[in-house]
Image (cartoon, rainbow, N blue to C red; front, side, top):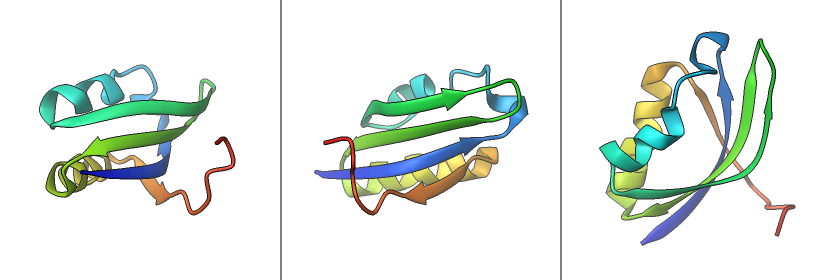
Length: 79
């Protein structure tokens, strides 16, 4: 099991879509939103994902395929 922390930048077209909810149903990952800032033009989310390495990597690829920018969080300032 691994824990991956990433920043997600959602394009306007996906802001109202249940993307994070769907991750837990399409892939064997547990998601935890650590922080979020959503406006009408952009959504920024700090997300933790726990799961087997392969499943977490598939979930990240899926996010990127949707057009969501995924950037690793180097240091977790929330903890």
